[in-house]
Image 1 (cartoon, rainbow, N blue to C red):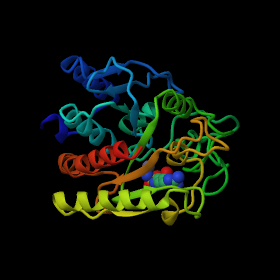
Image 2 (image 1 turned 30 degrees about the vertical axis):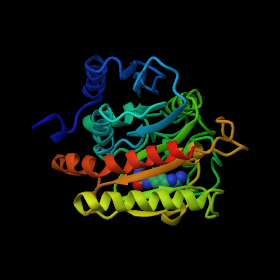
Image 3 (image 1 turned 135 degrees about the horizontal axis):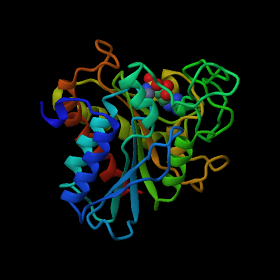
Length: 304
Ligand code: 0X9
Ligand code: ZN
C-alpha cells in the first residue's frame, strides 16, 4: 500500500513530517519538541508558510490525534499538509500538531485499540488516563465530564493538568493571530462549532454557522459524503474541550480573548466501522476535507 493506504505508528508519522520539512525546506518547518507527554514522548509541531522563516500575520491551527483510537485523524492531517504545501497563502501560516496524544496513540497499537485518553497514572486509582478533550482551561468541569478516573471522559484533577493539554495551549497562545482552528476527531461526519460547554449561541454564531454549512456543502460535492454542521452542544454538552478553548473566552483562556473560528471535525464514517475505519478510506476522506479547510482558511483570511 502507498503511505496513505495504511495507518502508521507515532515514530513513522513524526519521521514523515520531518521528511516533508526536508523536501520543502523553504515552506515547511519541523519543530521537534514543543512539549513532552506523560511518558516522555516528544510532541512536535509543523509550520507551513510561503516563507517559513518570515513572521506570519495570521495562523490557522490544526490539532490532530488528541483521541487515541480515532486513527483517521493523523493521516487526514498529513493529507492536508502534503496538499497544502502547494496551495500556501500570503501572510498565513498553518500550524499542525500531528499527534497531540502520542502515549495514548501508541497504546492503541500495543495494548488496546479502543483507548481514548492519555496515559496518566491517576493517584489513588487503578484506572489510567485523562480525557484531554475535557481537560482544557475553558469552563473546565462545568458539565459533560467526569471526576471518576475510570471514566472515558475523566477531566483530570484540575484544568490543564496534563502536559499534553499544556503543550497545545501554550503553543497556540504563542502564535500570531489564530483566525481558525480545527480539532480533528472521528467518527460521525460532523462539523461542530462552539460552544461545547453551553447551549447558548456564541457571539459570532451567524458566521460560524455560515462557514460550517458551506464546508458541509463543499465536502458533499467531492464524494457525496454527508457531514452535519451543528453546534457541538447539539451532540451533547461537554466542557473543557479544545474547541472551546481555541474559540477563546475572555474570562478563562490565555489567548487574550481572541476568537478563532473554531471547529471540531468528526471525520469518517457514520457508524459502519466506527473507530476501525479501513485504511482505504483515508485518501477519500482526505480528498473531501482538503477543499473544505482551504475554504475555511481563505474565508477567515478575507475577514479576520
Ligand atoms: O466528546 C468529544 O470529545 C468529541 N467527540 S468524540 O466522539 N471524538 O469524543 C466532541 C467534542 C465536541 N466539543 C465539545 N463538546 N467542546
Ligand atoms: Zn474524539
